[in-house]
Structure formats: structure tokens, C-alpha cells
Amino acid sequence: LIAPSWGSKNCLIVYGVQFIKQLANLKYRIIIRPHPQSLKVEKEFIQTIQSELKDFDNILFDFDIDGSESMRQADLLISDKSSIRFDFAFLYEKPVLTLDIPLKDLSVYEASIVGQLWEESHSEQLGIRLTPDQKSEIVIAVKKALDITPQDIRSFRESTIQNWGHSAEAIADWTLNKVKELRKL
Image (tube, rainbow, N blue to C red; front, side):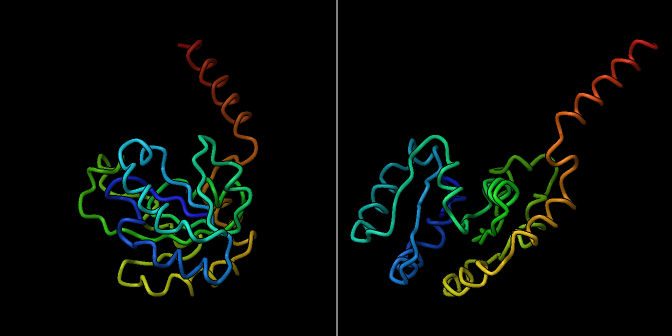
């Protein structure tokens, strides 16, 4: 599954589509899921990619609002700084290949307020991270990333997320305790 961000953060703009052709020629089944905002503001770009890849019958485009089915089917996610990486890894326990895009302007990210992106320092724990100068290594990285086990992802999730699988109870307990505290005031 290839799920890029949109705009200047889109890994397909930075890395191109040559690696997709290489993977398709190796008979990988590829789902390309453009960011919903790309479908609004980058229509020409998406049409160009579709046209360039139209001869591959093992490349599909997913334009559905809900990406769950594509994530369920995929064995690996290729993305950029998109938060879909964490959804995919944590929910499906599958590896991620991050095609990193160097930060030039933090203001295009929500994290501009805190001055850093937490996911910058943690993307390698989801799988493998490449930089644009490693563009030629994407196919090799795909093969390596597919060897990452669900247990590797699970370990990272368990060390990162509080109350996984029972957050509703934790939130309810916190809320009840907070109400009790406020009643004492």
C-alpha cells in the first residue's frame, strides 16, 4: 500500500513513481491510495500518475473515503510523514517503509507549535526510513521491511501507547475521578 501525504509533503512528488514501476515489474500487488486532499487540489498530478502506471494490471488505485480495506489487504505501507503510518502499524501490526522528506518548513505540519515532530524520531521503529538520496534503495528496503514481524511492531506500540485495547475504561475512570475531585471543591 502506498499512501502519500498531499502537497509538498507527498512522497510521490519527491521520490517519483519509478520505484512503483520497479515493484510492479517484480510482481508485487500495489495499491496506491492518494490522500483525499490530493483528489481535490492535485487532480492533474493524480491523473498523470494514473496514466503513467495504467499498463500495470497489478497496480490499483483506492479512492474510497475509508482506507481500512486497503490497509487490511496490504503487507507493507509505503508513506512519507503521514500519520497513516502509525494507524497501519499499530492497528494491523504490519511494517512501514517511510520515504522521508526533510523538514524545510515546520509550519506545514501541525507540530509547528512544539518545534518538533515526535514521529521523526520514531519512524524507524515502525520499519525502515529512507531519505531522498536513498531513492535507489527502495526496492531493497521493501524486501527488508517485509521481514519485520508483528511482534516488533507490537513491542513498539506497547512501549508507546497507554491503555491499548482498553482506553475507554481508562478515560471513564479518569473522568469519574475528576468529577469526584471537582465535587470536593
